[in-house]
Length: 387
Image 1 (cartoon, rainbow, N blue to C red):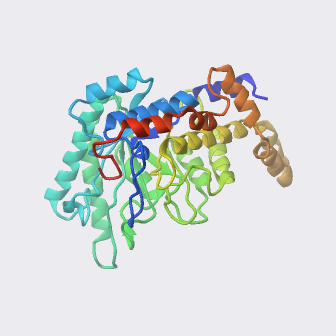
Image 2: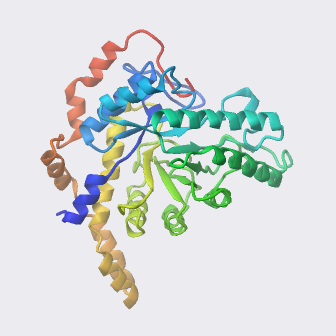
Image 3: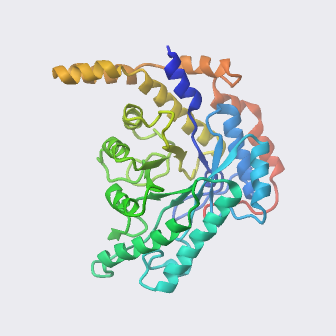
């Protein structure tokens, strides 16, 4: 089923895991604890490495500072490498300290803005120690009521703050700016959409790009159009894959709308996002609330792989020909044929040929690993969202 060129893309596929996916998490109402939850960043890395062991799809782990702060990042890096994974994106956090109640990089008080900038300098120092390439910035900055803030002035202050951080980046490092439609600010958010993120990174330079979180859009948004546009502008830096039904629900990718995931990945493929020289990074961003952590991540990366395999079956030449001839239904039929193809048996064969379990999700659940870590990790304080 898969040609040599398709297999090459599948072989190269890498989906970074978020360390926070393995900790306890929940909603504003309740954080649930689960057996076997990591008690420190080293155990988070172990769980992420387990996902890679079963799937071969997740060779790196993103860290969140200060949630994943350790005394010796070199030791954490060696620990990861010994388990067959690398430390990836470093995510900043300017949304939990009391001083950021009214904003961080956009705050009206220069001292607060400098504190937020200094935190990002600390994150870059961590990047230097871990060898990480990307600094990802997501801001909770915004307002709840009309008249509360000067929206334009906050954009000016955001640029100034980002410029200071950008100038601190090393030659092989880059900044990816994430946007979010709303929450926790409910009237306006300082980086609410791809256009705002694009305007801000474009003003900085070539080492700044946009991070697209698939759950951070209003219902009905054509996310695949945004993907195509950012690829056209050469400013799509990374993906955060998750899924949502109503808002940012942090669900397993593809849970709400598998066809949307297919359409998004199709635009990545058609517009060069899988090319050898592409710098687009792919990552999950999920905080599992009631799901088991490791199986949840396994299911997610497999969903991305499955949709990628379907997309690779799309006849691009046929689509171009149909467009030129105005064959609307023919073009749609080509795409739907690819989407409706069951690639799971072929992927199972593909995995087996590479020494991986045919069905990684089932293999992990049957392995007893979850019960093992539940017994081993008794005592100490479990890590969680915001720990």
